[in-house]
Amino acid sequence: MGSNNQTPFFGFFGKKTKSLKKINVGDVGIYHDVLTYYNQNDTGDAVKHNIFTKVRVLEVYQDLVEVEILHTEISDTVDPCVAQLAKINISRYVSPKNVKWQIKQN
Image (spheres, rainbow, N blue to C red):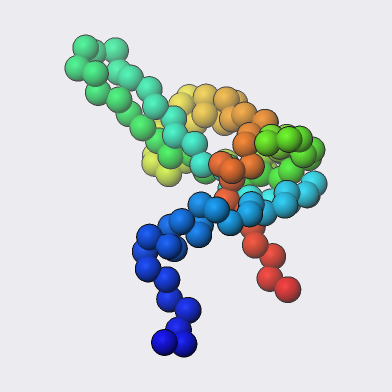
């Protein structure tokens, strides 16, 4: 009776309604994106690569942050041209909801 376990429904609902972390200049996090490109054949086969980018906040706007790109990692082995394309096209302005923010331990 004294445990703090929640049912899955209430746990999910609690995660969706809890307040978001207050973002400050200098905060660090990981931004995840997916690079998808299609082959020249007509099969419709797409090649997808997960891209993880470590970012630092430069400016905070309403529902938007400007970030400095610290490091980019692609989950799969890719051609150097594809890796360069992915690194060049990473947005410098992202929604803070799309970043997994670093939790500082006190």
